[in-house]
Length: 251
Image (cartoon, rainbow, N blue to C red; front, side):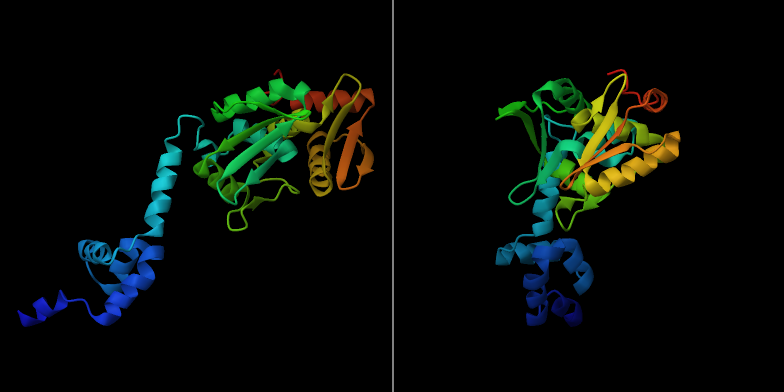
C-alpha cells in the first residue's frame, strides 16, 4: 500500500525529465520514458504550465488539412495529375518557409490558362495576382508544403531540389514533361523546346531521349539556364505523339 502511494509522487528527477522532454516529446513520449500514465503526465504538465510543441504542430497540421481553399493532401499519392503539377512547379515554382509555408507559382501572362489548370488540379481557390510582368499565386498551407517537401525535397532543409527530377514513375514522365513545357517552354508544329535549370534539363533531356529515341537536341546555354530544342519534323512529331499520352496534352 505504501509503495503504491509513493509511486504517485513525482520525484525531482521525474519532474526535471517532464520539464525537459515534454515540449518536444509530448505526453506519450514522456509517459513511455517514465513508465507513467498519460493522465499523470498531462496533469503534471498543466500544473507546471508546460505545453507540447508536437501538440501544437499536430493541431496546425490538422487545421491545414481541413482547409477549404486548397486540397492539402494533394501530394499524398503519385498520380498523373500530381506529375503534371510537379512539372509546372519545377518550371516556375518556389517555396517560402521562413515564417509560414507557402507554395509560390509565377509565370508569364500568356500562360494564364496553364496556371488556372494547375490551380484547378490543386483544388485551389487562391487568387491570381499581377506582379510586374508576371502572374503570381501564393498558396499558404503547411500540410500541402510539408508533404511536397517530404516527397520531393528535404523537409529538414525546407527547400526543394528543383535542379533534379522529383521521384516519378516512368509512366508519369509525359505528364511531368508537359507541365514543365507549359510552364517555361514552347510547343509548336515545327519546334518544341524545354527551358529550365541546367542540371534538371540535362536529366530531362536524357530521359526524354530514352523514352522517345529522338536525336540530340539543339542546346543553348544562358548562364544557369539551359534550352533544349528539337526542330526537325520527324523528332518534333515523335515528341508530340509521346506527349499525347499525357491526359493534359489536349489542354
